[in-house]
Length: 255
Image 1: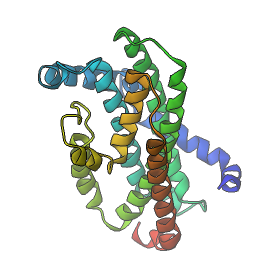
Image 2 (image 1 turned 30 degrees about the vertical axis):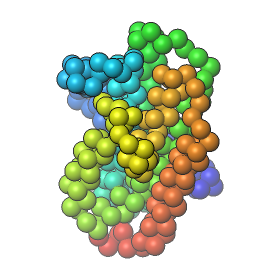
Image 3 (image 1 turned 90 degrees about the vertical axis):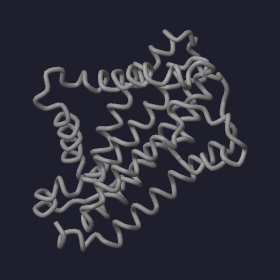
Image 4 (image 1 turned 180 degrees about the vertical axis):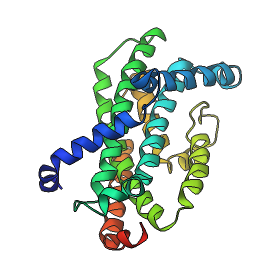
């Protein structure tokens, strides 16, 4: 993959620039929406859910922000990755280059948005009374795992979307369900141990939990969490590239 990147480096970088800029094209605030949008979402969730779930939750604003931050990155990266091939079909049919490059470019664009919002998140932790710590460096690990997971799922979704256009509607419903199953605004401690283990089947929740343990609890997650996140990321990437390898020649016939 590194050899392919060097070969198509210029085109890949141009795709990233285009994907990042086109998201805010014809908007007044432009790139500032990458910060304002999650903040507005946080404000709405803070107003709606505080009275129901936040009374007994310490640092509830940070708790909400961490969940929304991670989930938004996952949703945006995988949704844009799903449409990466079809949105670039005019280029794919004329220029010979690895098709997965288009999924990678959309994910890099989403990663940039995530990192910008992450800076704002750290500012809010200060406002919420949480002192900064060297432990924040541990967040590099879940971010990398989530990035690999997003790329892998984006590869799977983009391949399916070429053959089944219904995927965009089905995935919209799935992400809505996933949002409610990721404990963004409520705690899972109130449930039994068996139910809490079911939540661990959700890789997005595992990543959110990692962020909260490091930032709010001021500790490091167990080795189990590290291995579980790595496993989810590796499986998603392997399945994604397997689907591309299997259907690479078929894509052109359905575009």
